[in-house]
Amino acid sequence: MLEQNHIERVKQGDREAFAFLVDRYKAPAFSIAWKILKNSADAEEVVQEAFIKVYHAIHQFRGEGKFSTWLYRIVYNACISQVRKNRNSCIPLDDVPEDRADFYQLDDALKQVSDKQVKVLIQEALDELDETDFTILTLYYYEDKPLKEIARVLNIRYSNAKVKIQRARLRLYEVMKKALKTEMHDLL
Amino acid sequence: MKPDESDRPIIRDIMEKGVRCPDSENFTENIMARLGYETPGQPEKVPGFFNPPAILMMVFLVVLSIVPFMNWLLGVVNGETIALMAVLQEIIGQINGYLLYSPLFLLIFLVSFILYQLDRFLEKRSALE
Image (cartoon, rainbow over all chains, first blue to last red; front, side, top):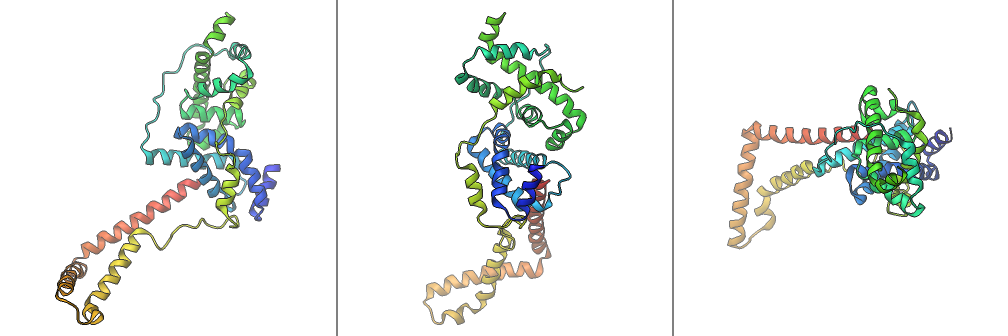
């Protein structure tokens, strides 16, 4: 509701309202862009461009879907387009791990890591994920987006999104387990 | 099948810690500065008429139109300039000949121009989808 209010204010020319929206969505949008482009400067540029596009096209947004879904779709498409221009190669996808993910054990292991180190450790672990896994996990768990909207952002089918979130979840467990190898071993 | 929802708080916590912020501390300010004082909803200022093929065509047309009047415009000049002008006139005359007698030349130009505009249109549309 608050978001819709801000969007209406932006449509009426309120720049402060737009700055609020930028502040609200810059971190997840930048994270997705950073993950795809693998370059901080490029990611910042693409996300800034995306926000500027959104500002110019705000009247096209009729509120049928969520604003964030629209924004992430623009960011995602811009990143894919940039990758095509840069001819960057994507990281090949590994096989899906087969073992069951025990996130409670992972959580216990994380508690053994100092607060200072935990952010760096997690960021380094997430660097191991490919861009699709990272994007889908960010949207599903961080942004609480339903799978239907994630499918729209990534331009995939709903059934495909359901499969991908399962795979991404298992891959996350794998990379976190690898990063917390010592702590996990101590727990056993 | 949806993922196991009991893990959600743990994974959410991981993702919250893993999300990065832009390096630039003035990220929002930079965007606002780039927007200037434009009102929202206005189309982005992009060069429309002055695109590369149009500029090329205009330069060509200007040269094409002034070449026959070069002698009159420059008046009496030295031999070297006359020779240079003769070469230029010859080249322009050749191209002019192609334009007049070869529709293919014009067709190639038109097709490249249309493809360029189409590419820009599709790029813009896909960016906003």
